[in-house]
Length: 119
Image (cartoon, rainbow, N blue to C red; front, side, top):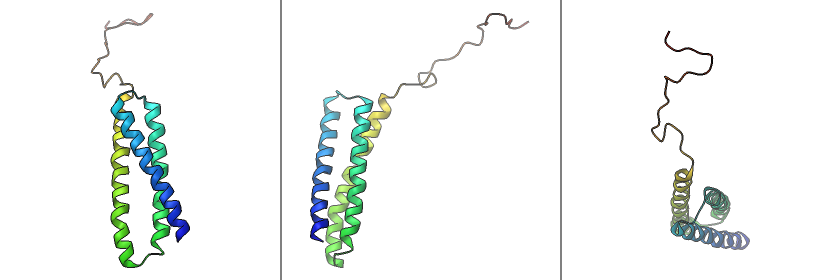
């Protein structure tokens, strides 16, 4: 159990560092979609690893300890979800718009060579 707790402490520290890094990057407004995507994926992988460690640790806890631990676990999961959503939002905002998204219309009265329209 101590080994799992140690791994979880390391994973939580990484989790916090990645969330802080994401927050600083977004606040700086100096970011690109690839940089946000990398950070998003790193935080998601870290969060997935933390979830596995939480499940492993829970097997060794009493009901009372598990209930107490659940509060802490919920906070980590909630802050990760919020950060991942924020990163996804900014990634989407940086994606190139399609013609339809920009409200542009296609002209249908333009003829191509060798094709006559209307007649």
